[in-house]
Image 1: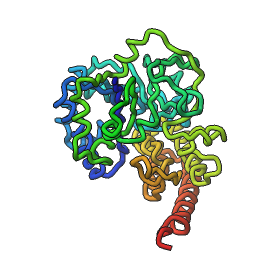
Image 2: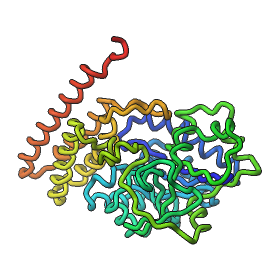
Image 3: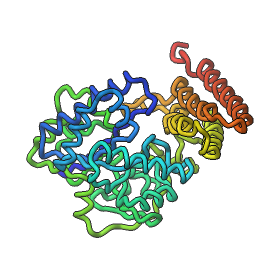
Image 4: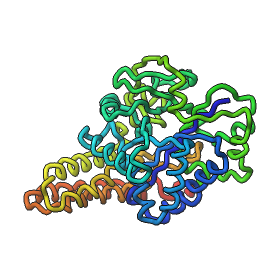
Length: 388
């Protein structure tokens, strides 16, 4: 069996320190340790730029050094992404470029100027044609996507093949939804006859924080002589021939019915979700206002807030989708939504130019509207429903 394993390591740029520390201690250090103990093991990994910055702030310099060594040894392949985890198909192209550039700079500053960033991770594996074209222009050669992006249906992909996106020219490797929706090492233990190429792509927190592998199934799997692990670039290099395809705008959690109904990014902008509509209205106002006043003395501070508000989590936590069957939470959290909109309104508040007065007042009204909608829905619909 060949196992191509992809990890996504990310925490909100403005997350509470204890949240980042918990994920780091339970999962990220665990991943580094297992790889160090198994020098034949190889993985591909996205460490989002904003997480690296928080690691530096919280004193995790040693962990950065350990991953840097693993990269140098060829066990870890790092990929590019958006520095603050915005959903790229839904933000302006200028902002896509800024976040890609900042992510590249952060990775090179921390893991070595000469590291090769051949691949790209679209936050949430959210593919869009225009975003993909921009990614290709930065020199990235490939991207990993969920298999549903192939044609809008699950179970249609040959995971032994490398595909080519007609729209952008990016080579595409598709993760298996089935094997990525479980803790694969334990799944393999119960299904030892699995063979062929297995491609998984998961949040790094699955390994340690969300799933306690007390029996060390991952370590045992990596020690098997009949297991081969590769980075995605190594896998692609073995496949000179590619299969061209027109990809479907979608994400790694898209459902077939959602795509049929035209909801490509259901979790972040679902048709009919009034709260998400309002948040995007505030986000659009914040972005346009901040960029209009880029010569403002407080521009850098305004952008500091803006990029944190544009993180995909701001919108995700307003979707109310149930993820408990796949090691995830119920996607409703008014505190997290409020955290995001606080950043968006503060982006406009931060600007010093007197000409921003009208935008400031409009933003405050939107901000209050969203807060009212969120908390009214929470107290009337979600709070203690299970106890009634």
